[in-house]
Length: 151
Image 1: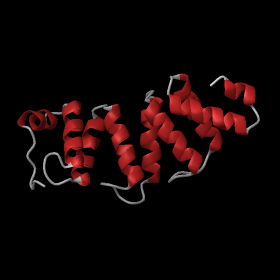
Image 2: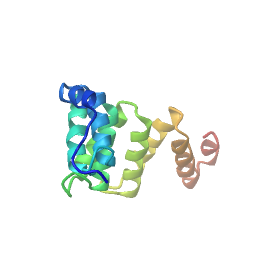
Image 3: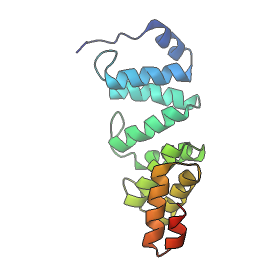
Image 4: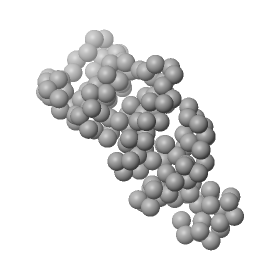
């Protein structure tokens, strides 16, 4: 594996100049090790910068980092939920499903089945198949088979 960090010049310059797409690309390259040793802490730093520039993908990447505990402090449950929520409220169905899963399982957040169903429903209504399946399963387990069949 390569050592050091060899970032394509244009990407590094654009990222340093505040381009959120370049910042996200830089973070992804650093996370994967494409440009040297993998560095979740360095990747997280660029994700934060892109997130501040309004990148929903970066916000989702930060939420995933928090969930996995990589590149972040250990006890970041509140930040995890806040990042998933911020991205979910912006309409990102992937974040809506991730938030619902976290709420459903009590994974680093307080378990809240009703709120999980709300987020599954939002993602399902936007066409996310996984959310439709999970929502149908929940509705069926609550004895609402007719409503579940609609999904």
